[in-house]
Structures are given as structure tokens and as C-alpha cells.
Length: 347
Image (cartoon, rainbow, N blue to C red; front, side, top):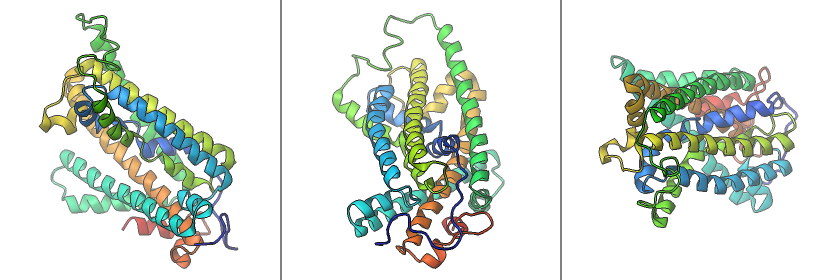
């Protein structure tokens, strides 16, 4: 645990092939370009309809967190991420605990995505058993990441592009709805930010504590410090840009939804499907099913990207003997990836 940051073995090392653009795309896929859609109804009910406000407040806090990650990556450009930062700056034992806390996050994310993807696929193909779909997605995530980090980056680009197209389609339906809605008052376009009838600071605070979930995952960018060109510059830029872009995009998505739905609460049994309900209101079953399918694609991308980051974190810990070095600290010579960690993380 006390091995200096950046120490490497004499064997093969991770290959620096990722660009700033690759990092931004990977970060956006981990977070998901449609991140607020899943928790929109929960935040709406908690914050009295001020979803946009809570997401923007959360952005301020997460922005400073992103800067902190970027500054630490400049000092310690290591795949170990926060494990290395805490271990080197505070105490090796605390770094070890931090590393395992991050590992649990990155391991649980692909597992959750495997479950969600299996359930969503069953909605489309109900005749396929759940257990076979779970095995399929677990193996699929691993195969995508065993092709090399550059291959994984290209896959993430395709997934991000697909999700972006769906978001644009949703915006187009909202614009058509607003243009055909003739009962707009003077406050119609400002109520998503501030509605005096439902505004309450306690509710805003409660909603903001939920809105931060929109940003979970951008810290995974720092785990690619040893595979990116010019890490001391690009990790900082990518982390901050992903945080800001995710925040602005999320705010735009929920702002559009609130123009349609307003500040009224969703029924308790409809909270989880609030965003598709809004979509159905303006685009019928076409947009409803399109968003449902996009949630499947988003979770596939998030599962792949989270597993990609987890493998790098495990490598950083294994290389420093925090976990068995012979297994976790090993790099596959042909593709220059921690293949053992990818396989282990899929189990």
C-alpha cells in the first residue's frame, strides 16, 4: 500500500491511445446523456416541481469536485484515481479503504446495468428467460472491453451518438407541443426555475440531494490517466467538461419536460416512469417506447464504461500490492489492457 504513485513493473504497461474527445465520450456514457430521466419524477415530487433548479444547484457542487479530481490527476496521473490521491496525500490505509469503496461502486454499476438490461429486454422479448439474458449481458460487457481501450472508446461513441439523437427527437416534440399550446402565461417559461406557488427551500434542499445522482460516474475519467495523451492536461479538461455538459444537458431535458408537465406532482405509482409519461403526452406511444428502448441502450453503455473504469482501478491497486499483484497488477501484452480485471469484474 505504500508503493509510490506511478511505480510500474518492468513488464508491459497501459498504452496511451485515448484523446481528450475519447475521455469526454466515455465520461458522458458512464453518466448517461439521459441521466435525469430515471429520477425525474422523484426529484419533481420532492422539490415541488423545481427539478431544473435542483440540478443546477447540484452542478455547482459537482463542478468544484470535478476541479479537485483534475488537480489531483495533475499531481498523480495514475490509474488508481482517488485510491492513489488519498493514499499518497493522507494515509496509505485510508487510500486502501477509498479504493475498495470505489471498487464497490464500479462493480455494482455493471451488475445493476446487467439486471436492468435483462429486465428491459424481457419487456421486448418476454419469451427469453431472465437468467440467460443476465449471462448474455455480463459476457457482452466483458467482450466489449477485452478488445482494447480504443475499441471500447469507439463503441462508447456510437452509443453516445444514438442517445443524443433520441434526446434531439424529444426536444423536437417538446418544441412542437409548446408552439401549439396557446394558453401560456407570462411565467410559463420561468416556472421550471421558480414557481412561487410551490417554492420551498427545504424542498429544494431535499430535491438537490437527489439531483446529485445525475452526475454519478464522472470521477471514473481519472482511472484512465495512464492511457490518455497528456494526462496532466486532459484529465482535468475532460472531468470538468463532462460535469458541465452533463449538468447543462440534464437541466435542458428536465426543463423541456416541465414545460409539458408543469409543477404538479406525479402519482406515487407513476414516479419511476414519469419521463416516459411526459413523452407519451407529447409524442404518443412512439416516443414512449423510443425512450424506453433508449434507457436500455443507456444502461448497456453505462455497464460497459463502468466495467472499463473498474478494471483500471483494480490495476492501480494491484500494481501497488494493495490486492494480489500477480493477478490484478498484470497487463495483457498484446492489447495492453488489464484483461484479468475485466474478466473478474464480470463475475
